[in-house]
Image (cartoon, rainbow, N blue to C red; front, side, top):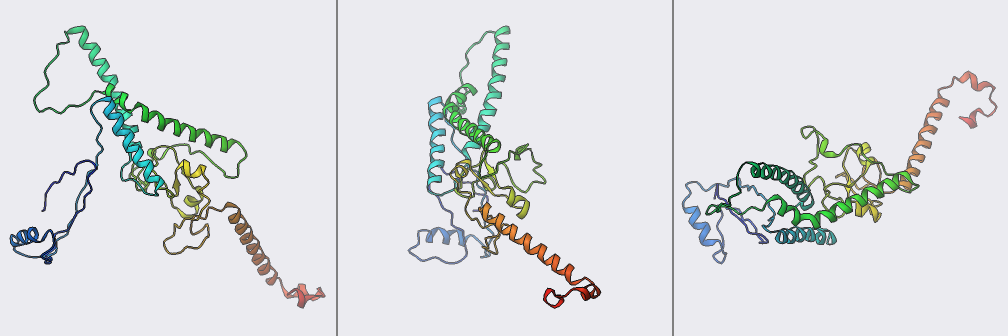
Length: 302
């Protein structure tokens, strides 16, 4: 119904069915329910139906519980990558922001507790009945520390590998951007740096939370974003064709992501040779005919 709010518990499979004025088969599970709702309506019209979903991830209360919840959702994201599936959640981004918020909250709580101890006695108070149990910042930080450590280590390893590839001799050219995408103006930027749709690996669908690889050729030639995770780049999967243009599968760098640097360089060299040959041919045809009178092989040259 319009304005109806539905809460779906964690891990529950769910599907939505639109309420249409058409009749259902008597064996349908929604036959009686639909007929009751349609009888209350004066006009049986096809209404526009849409839903707004707020996806959330349960954090937990104790340090052990938070550790299990966070590590579980990260493990699900890893399994999705192995099966070439994109996760609906963005657990790494949420974890990084949770750590940022919890550190700031812990610093404030520490200052407040230090100030209270100077002026008044610390008398324990009973929690209000029905109040939600919210863990303090220190408990949250202790719970997310193992998973956060693994994420930060993987990001630092990818950054060091990019530095080595940029300074050393490598077949693939790597450059490091001067500022992150989160510094872009959200009003003028065409992508959302915190969204799973824009910042997910084009190959495996993994979430791009912090460090990732970006194709400069697609941005400059096609005005498109081709972002992949550091794992796929390390495995050399960027050397594959990816269709960016929805109208053609032509393996041309001016139309799609080809992933073949040597082949594109040869094509570009061939284009340049043909281009300059055409220019020379046109210049040769525009020379006045008087100059050809002293040329013995005029017919052959022309």
